[in-house]
Image (cartoon, rainbow, N blue to C red):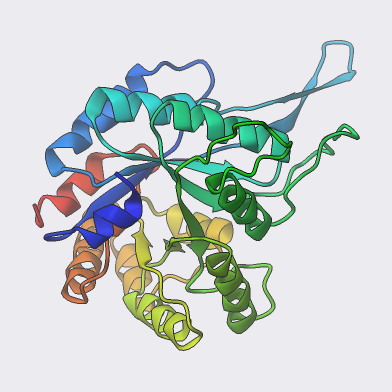
Length: 314
């Protein structure tokens, strides 16, 4: 089932989760352990993140430096397929602009379709730390709007090359939204201008960046609606677990943490997991009262705290 169908047909609260592929060298059992922990709570769907290759530098014994380019976390397409077909849980495959050509994107869409995966989250992705050489007969999507446009074309049977008897591929396409604006955007208004463009090109729902202050989500939805964006806007939340995250989350995701949460966590560092659980439960309760389309948890493959949060509502 598509994400938009889950939302339109919901009869009660929906909960979805986002996981990352295990590091290179691990096995699919890591995924099975995560999904088995989530199954009792009836996930509506599970997002699987994508990762482009990066450059890594190793100093040899003779003092020279070796550069290697590879993916630390491969497997997005395969993980989507095995979750969906082994656990009968719908999946959302993430596709990126950065690090991938349009041709590679088209191949990924075809493979996902073969596996029965019909949900995609279209995002630009982090910048590369090396220059990827693009062959002259290849092209790239520079922005998430370009990626959405390519997906909309393939939904109409329009491939990069003219193909005889080409059939359309059926996908539900989502895009990312930033209640506290994307860090590269000069203003929230400008950010929402480009978000609306992605919706006009075919995005059917918006998944927000994590936030810890629900009012920022509510304000974001209000502004989006005033600008004519009518698609569902799904709130994404993360559970605070460690003292280090008080610095790493704002640094990595360019968001603010509420003073009340920071002060309680700083004053009780040994109890931060319990504080994070209570805060997330309060967020979820308020979001559900507002009849949000779904509550999406960024769990980073750590199911311990999310289970404690969600069992209150299942």
